[in-house]
Length: 337
Image (cartoon, rainbow, N blue to C red; front, side, top):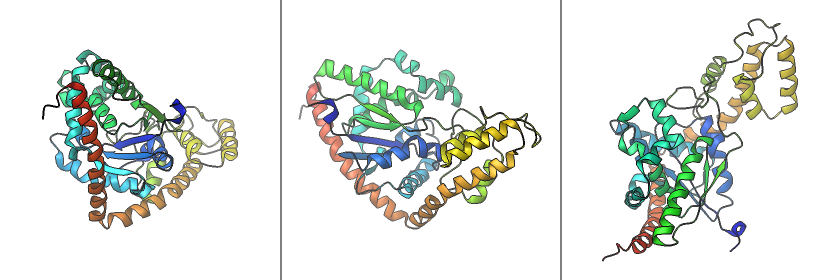
């Protein structure tokens, strides 16, 4: 079969450590909405086991947010009729697959993974990193490969995880015979959305995000506190566009690109205040988020219906996992009974 004719099996997911923000929306959600209409199979995983790798002492947080991230995705337009939505911890076969894959990865390789390294630094783990956190690239490979997924919508920072998954695929196939195919990643049009504070990444843990559940008032407050040009003190002063978070967001979210070009010229020349720009951005973001928030509020009125969707999806996903694990056991010659 020609590579271009390979049918897409898409898998994506979120760690349920908090409600989702604009970084998730442009980094992954937009692609998962598009791909659910194009792929032969589409899976969405609430990655609660992954979330526990650095939240083991706070399971209630993970339990609450398992529902929240599912509601966020449904509000954005994820369709359970097109996308199988499931909870990671309810499929024990994924954990077994991860355990088997661990024998194919060295400790040194895990420590070199750029995503793991940066997140360990961000969380201040040092050498006291939980073993589960260090090996989560292996767990992520199991998340992907249990469904034989071959296309993963991710943020820019997750590309090293896909590379490590393909290393595991190569090792497994070489040792045990052709079982898995290579995985491709798909990065959103905005690979990495900077935080409202100008930090390189919008993040729940850094508290620098605008959430899909934020009210208009909260959105405006966050935008008004955004980092611009610290030397642009008076309206008549010339201002810098580069590194200016407000302009970065306008470039991404404001559909009137010609007006933004003119605003940049005016800002650089002098005579355009930060407040005017921020009010424009707040309006643009409110127009995007308000319909999502309103759908979200409606969906949240019936949490049982959301859990029913997750339960039904988990049942379907587990059927795939059992089938794949049976293949793996046979290939590894541990299919004794």
